[in-house]
Image 1: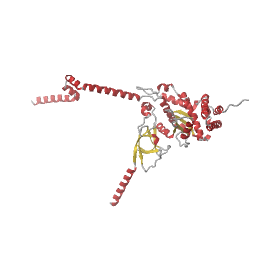
Image 2 (image 1 turned 60 degrees about the vertical axis):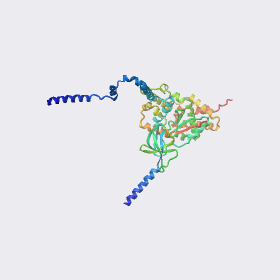
Image 3 (image 1 turned 180 degrees about the vertical axis):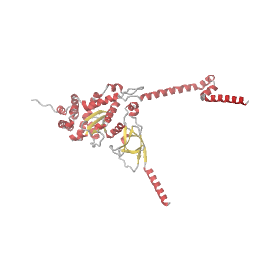
Image 4 (image 1 turned 90 degrees about the horizontal axis):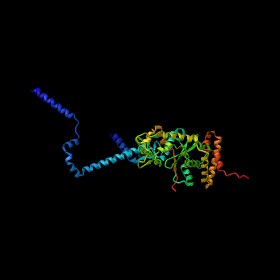
Length: 132
Length: 295
């Protein structure tokens, strides 16, 4: 009896710790045309899922996952992974797909193309010059 | 007597049944039956009800118009500027396996070094995207992006073969940046359909997919077959010359770089197509060299 009580108590304690430890930072939106939720905080890491521009993602903070300052730890549907912070926006972005839906749909992009388009943004070395 | 009663009962139930089968009347219809609106028309007008009905009708009409405008806007082709960026990226996606840009690449720190070279030349508020390729057959290319952006492609095997420094890579990118700024690529690739369809509406029809297909074919041809003319190369080299002259260190690096490329394309069979697309490093060196004095 004591043993069962002890087990119950310890599991309750664990649940409480994991619940308080995890914090929802907020809901953000994908900025590029297409992008990936990565398995790890590395541009070339495997993709868990491909998402389109304006797709909402939950940004989470937890002590269990150490995140690179450039990356956000996110939850999208059943997946938890990483997205570059530069690709997330607090406001719903004005996406190409939304501005030209019929033109975009007419291209009938297949799965491989959607995948590669998302990867493209991971592989770009992007830069800009200062304002004079 | 009983039979008579049964017949009457049957006929009553038949009539009631038929009445029940007829379509039920709307509440409004029932009200219309009860009230003779004509007789109360003046009262309604006094109450301003007919005015509010008119207002409602106008509102509905405006909403319908608005809805139509929104619906129609869904059938718009992107503007020329947006199309350039979109088609350039679509071409990169379509040729992903061939170009082999999806690989783990070295970090050359190009975002900073190229930005600093551009700023040194006085180019401010310029956006660029660099895509490194793991393919020796496509050495370099510059593609137009949207919103004044340029997309620059460069082969990592080529960088390694020449053992290029960060500065030399930036100078190669600067050449391609100038080619894009001069509009050589757009002029070579632009189609009639792009000019006439971009930004227009195709409501009630289907988008002309051949516009994108034609552009893709012309991208292929320009990048893999046609390349640039001697005249364009001369103009680009002279532009590099005039921009780098104020910085002797950069000018010398560029001059040495052209010599390196010239020697390699002449000796390494892997890069034999380079001269056809970018004619020619040997001539570029000559254009930059001071004229020989004739005694």
